[in-house]
Length: 366
Image (cartoon, rainbow, N blue to C red; front, top):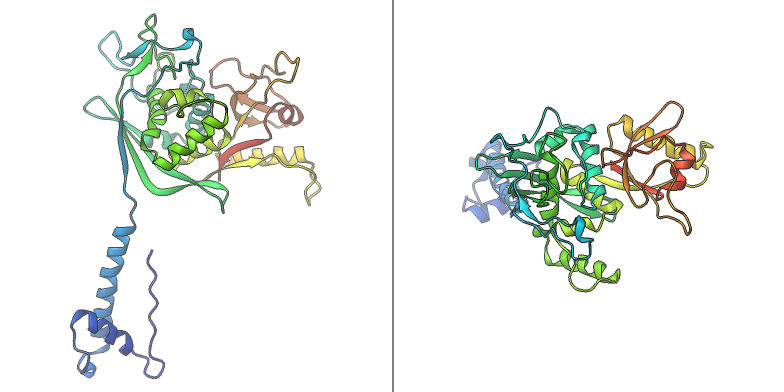
């Protein structure tokens, strides 16, 4: 919004000085102001200011990012070959000459099911949004008459001062083709996010769109990704497409995705430590925080820790280095988590067990 402050002549209470500047730019008479009534003066200045404001507003509008996501990189050379799809196929096309619908009713978290790609954080985020904000999922993707899909995201950037991801105001529109990675032995089933068992195509299409967002990155962001990749001991340029997603996500990546899909700020929250000024323990604060977020329909996503030396598995059927959605904190204070595999969900756990087996931070909307 453009704010304009008019300084009125204190001796006369009129707009004489402002008019003189306006007249010099527009060619209107500088003298004979007595022949122009106050309404005419104000209207002339107002019209000029409106034109300036409109010009500034047009110049401030960020340009839309647009690209086509056709066949992002999907074969990770560092992965066991048995988990690497063979090719792109058309698993959304059914044998009865119909296509898997984009939506089967309202989006649900169960329709976001992880495949062999190591992107549990992406799928958990999609499922959590489908539960708390199904409209955001529905609004982000539509099927076109040409058979492709239009995915509309909000560009997100991290604000150091606000310590959160927030929308820049620039939309990103991706044209996503329906081809998806498949295994030769199962050509009717997507290798990554599943649509065959869920009956809806929105999750694999959004997963593909997220894989293709790096096509819109500028040089600075691409260079940053490569620096991080090299700092982890990997040679060459950072991977792109599905291969990038296969490397896993961190809490910030999931916050960025929440903002991209909802257009709302998202943040990473550190677990509380010590007692607060109300005398609540850190465990009680954490429980109350998450209960509050869920009651306000704010998704909560958390990652599990690594295995300790000589530790064979995490307790409560938790998978190490995996991302879960917190679906509920019940009246007894027990935590319920959802596995994006759509199976092998963890057992309920106390807040102490939750803290002991997860990384000490979570991702949510503001």
